[in-house]
Length: 237
Ligand code: ATP
Figure 1 (cartoon, rainbow, N blue to C red):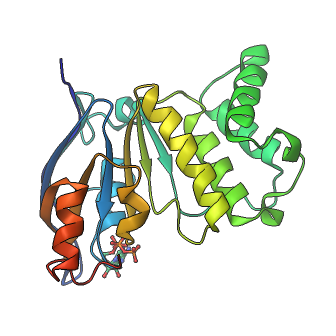
Figure 2 (cartoon, helix red, strand yellow):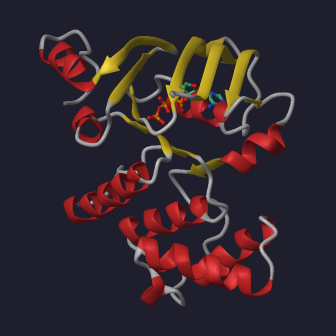
């Protein structure tokens, strides 16, 4: 039976006079891999940050696995793995130190923590690099470490903000195969990009955002056809 894992209703967020997210609603079912496509500035990151409880909406509701993101953000955080598009302030750590820092934050202790770090390093293929400093990683290696961090607490839902941006073709392929494995394991995955072809290869469904509003929620092929016919003219194909 299908189960709604991400439910977004009437989400709004403005910055001063700019209405970045105007009125966004959608549902994503368990096990779906959904692409969130839109031009730069369409409001994708702002929407994803609200889903990830990193930003408070001006109006609207977010539920993750039935938990209310506004009333109970901690319950939601335990179910979500957030893959940001950059590391932020952790550049002077090694990969191992970085993962250890977050594993401790998730309250993994002793041998269980060591095992979990090893599992995510093995899965993301960074074990041989574990003593390398984060600021010395290639974009693809960095993206795999960010994914590993997001997987530490084995979340049911993964939110990935522009994970393929700036990756070379090999790194993109590696990332895609990891996403496929995670999808086969039953994780629900929501991935943003402003490049349709990056998403259409791995996503069952697409949500197309323009100027803070959903213009399409459906199959990738339908959206691709629309883009070719000039409907989604701001999205690079
Ligand atoms: P990109 O692909 O470029 O990241 P996006 O679709 O993710 O674009 P957002 O980053 O959500 O879009 O931004 C939507 C709009 O809101 C943009 O015009 C952006 O400049 C603005 N915006 C986002 N965050 C803030 C903020 N903290 N303060 C002011 N304006 C913001």
